[in-house]
Length: 145
Image 1 (tube, one colour):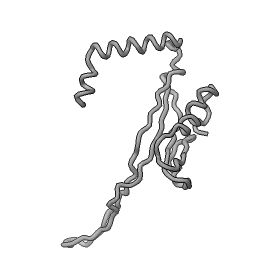
Image 2 (image 1 turned 90 degrees about the vertical axis):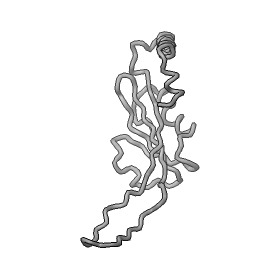
Image 3 (image 1 turned 120 degrees about the vertical axis):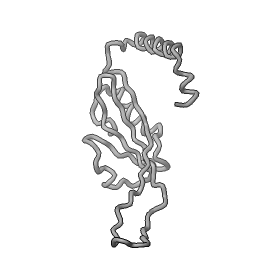
Image 4 (image 1 turned 60 degrees about the vertical axis):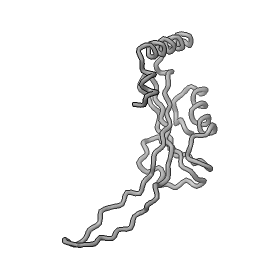
């Protein structure tokens, strides 16, 4: 734990935080509406090349194997859950213009792949198209359409 984080974890700081949170929940009539309290998070994932195994004869003195030294691409993944425990399928953001079919391999039902032309970061356009528009529609269909 960093020093800054440890200093922010005093009993007084925690008490002030939860008092402020309680005030916000009361002012917005959300205390008994966990379905309306959301946590959205973005995280970066490194797509690394994971070289397979190399098979050689027993006793080999020198084994050559060529692998990629590059660190791989980074993608962003947005996840969202409410205090009731309902969650939205993840949204994965890849850098580039052209979406490849294999980008969707392994995604859960409703998961979405979005292409970021300049980067794999969440932009205001991606955020508003996905999350904010959902809030104003007031329903939980496919969040990222």
